[in-house]
Length: 131
Image 1 (cartoon, helix red, strand yellow):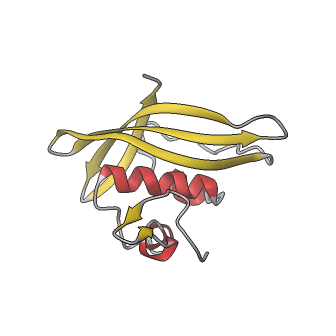
Image 2 (cartoon, helix red, strand yellow):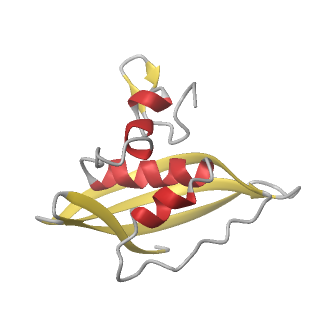
């Protein structure tokens, strides 16, 4: 993929390109996301790019579903990170709003507070709830 990263993370000169942002985690399994916010952004990007393999690989084994069922009309259209905080030495929460469309209807949004855990140097998504 070329162009700006779907997660919308910005640097000093505007939107970061995919390769310098989430692409390094999605395209190189040996490069783990350094923190929970980066993992959450990369998971959003994986959803936007329909990379179910990455979404499942970064989901904690205790809560991971057997498969994802992403509808063919589902399109992720924007992400806003509202809060990121460490809740322990190997735990964190990220609150975000993600916008999407699902077919010809209007754009919708989901807000979630996600929990993450770090195991053996890698962050994993545990679960999320709507605040």
